[in-house]
Image (cartoon, rainbow, N blue to C red; front, side):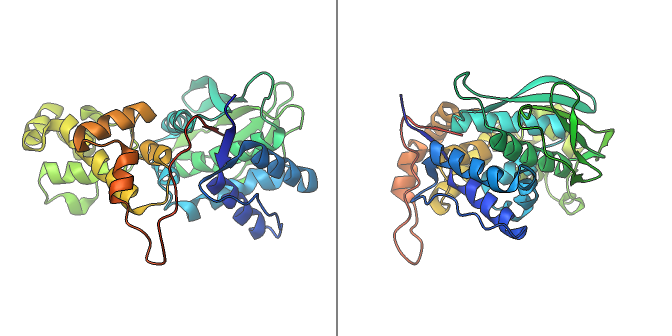
Length: 319
């Protein structure tokens, strides 16, 4: 069985968030973007043993400070709660996460989700708390107003209300999550300063501002205040809607591959591709190279030395 890996960036976020609460916790040392899954699990369970689950729930509050990370930026750009969960599940597919968030029920103003894993190794309560805390903060930032979060099957425990984490989940019942929100914030529209630009330029800016969104011609036209057929005509010289979207995603992915230290999977997710094969296939069509080959050919080293190795290990899963 292939060895499993976890995100070193995630644990660095945990360290920063805990330090803000006066908790000194040192995550395992990594020489790249990934570290052994077992080390990540031991670190989180150790924090929970020493300090309880509440500090791990509050780690998500540090997300805005990490918005330069393309994966975090893509999640923060979600258009409402249900779009957020779709993006989160797509991120899990990209990273081959051992643990997954499954939506059991959803409707207007509510959602029931469960954090699951292999029957032989389900998520630990510490891992549940970390993911739940991150999703809760993301929901608040993505428009869910007056959000209430409860955990557990029977006699749910309310862990988040009035904009703050108030209690920790029960250790034996921490993987089932109920989110409710009475209303959401209105969607963000095209900036007023774009009004004087042509439709293709305005469309490019909107797509580039959130390449991870599940864009359709209809939703782009609605953002621009144009009928879909009219927009498609105006985009003809740019290759139509599909051609422009493909161009935007390829250009942003290429920029991140050349300049960023992010893994190929994070870049693919942040640029809106469905999964790793989809990213590789479409990027190669437009550049004649796979993302990994493109990075090797064009990666610009940092001024202080050679670029760090950020290639994703083959045959590895992350969580």
